[in-house]
Amino acid sequence: MDLIYTLNIIGTFVFAISGALTASEKKMDAFGSAVIAFITALGGGTLRDLLIGSQPVGWMLDPNYLYTVMAALTFCYLFKKWIVKLTRTMFLFDTIGIGLFAVLGVQKTLSFGLSPAIAIMMGAVSAVFGGVLRDVLSNRVPLIFRREIYATACLAGGGLYYALTFTQLSDSLTIWIAVVVVMAIRVLAVKKGWGLPGIK
Amino acid sequence: MDLIYTLNIIGTFVFAISGALTASEKKMDAFGSAVIAFITALGGGTLRDLLIGSQPVGWMLDPNYLYTVMAALTFCYLFKKWIVKLTRTMFLFDTIGIGLFAVLGVQKTLSFGLSPAIAIMMGAVSAVFGGVLRDVLSNRVPLIFRREIYATACLAGGGLYYALTFTQLSDSLTIWIAVVVVMAIRVLAVKKGWGLPGIK
Amino acid sequence: MDLIYTLNIIGTFVFAISGALTASEKKMDAFGSAVIAFITALGGGTLRDLLIGSQPVGWMLDPNYLYTVMAALTFCYLFKKWIVKLTRTMFLFDTIGIGLFAVLGVQKTLSFGLSPAIAIMMGAVSAVFGGVLRDVLSNRVPLIFRREIYATACLAGGGLYYALTFTQLSDSLTIWIAVVVVMAIRVLAVKKGWGLPGIK
Image (cartoon, chains in turn cyan, green, red):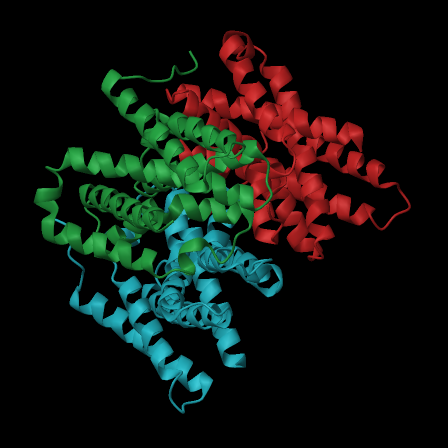
């Protein structure tokens, strides 16, 4: 699971950067940027932990998450100009982060004895609610409610993960397959411009 | 209590529709609509459960709530034109939902050993915070903070429910009396245009 | 600790007034004002309690907090004209409230066995998130994200409190020193116009 932990930290780092960049657009100061970066990176998992009753919430028990957000923030201060050009790299890590958060969220919720439907939903909550909270705190309608397909990708990947737990595959292979599926759906959705219809 | 459970589900259904209609006004996609519908229907009870420490929160342990929100959403996609004409029917169910959520919220909070004042407050939170969260996520000042009297109706009905628990009346009769009082106050408030004064 | 309890109540009172005044600016009715006052005063501590898993959250177990918010609201209705002139007195109490909430938040989090870094962070959350939630519910970008230095003051005071727990000083003296440091930094920051740079 070491590689998974590492990628989890990388996902946190990239999500924190996305939060810090939003804060910078909104002309927030260092404190505001830190809060938004933190909430973007860890808000989804926090909400999941509160709902399932896993307290103290995850990042409180492992200081590396806090340090990762601080590192991301410092990185943003130093290299902002350079980061905004790295859209492809950022998108890649962001997609890895989403896939991992979604699948690990399903795994954690199942470990609390909750039903598969709820677990798959909590996977998506882990992956996307950080971004929702970022947008609410920045006073805008959450982006994801208007045009992204990635919650759907999370639900599909989470469902697949659950299905694969009934097979002979090892746990880490199961996680990887599901994460790759989330990533593939998201990349395809962005490339092909897929979207969900609204209520007309 | 079967009738109460059924009405609880109906309340959830109607609240979910109100959320989906708001999402549609804001031109959200299917995912955004689902999230807003879910939060409108179940957000108040979720907040109550978090505050009193009842975790996993209620709807996680009974999949019918999740299915009800999905059914409401499907219903909205199929019959939106027809729903918006049914304002009276919607208002009736909405009012039943509010009354029930308020009274059952008081009951649950008391069962956690908390004081009556807190329980009555949690009843109102159960009934109205779904709508508050819907408005925050849709980036508008919560409607209820500006003109509705129904939180007051919830507090009155919740207080009455508590008072009636000291009488010889059966629990379900007690619930019904309190629910009807919440509904009556709300209907009267809307008909007569009652409102609370702001701070001038 | 009686003096600390009293000041905690005074801090709650002043925070509630600041919430009620915001609600009045946004033309909310009495219910909206009560909710905003309550959340401004108690939202920070509530979020801290949820994150560390201290449930039912603090104010549910001591009715004085609820009564204090109601008293503040009544006070606002009666004396609004007079209050808005008392900016210096309000600022003083607000600063005492922030200092106390920050330091007592650190103390409570440490008592749950969490790490110092998390405890100091939770101190700042206790002190400032009430205001953040007030702003989100009033549909504006949280003020503190744009120009106040007081979260930094809370972090400094919280860190000092933790450091002083290793000395021979009594617990209440330790609290007072830390609170005074928070207050001093904030007063200096306001007088000198200190601010944190944003990400450019």
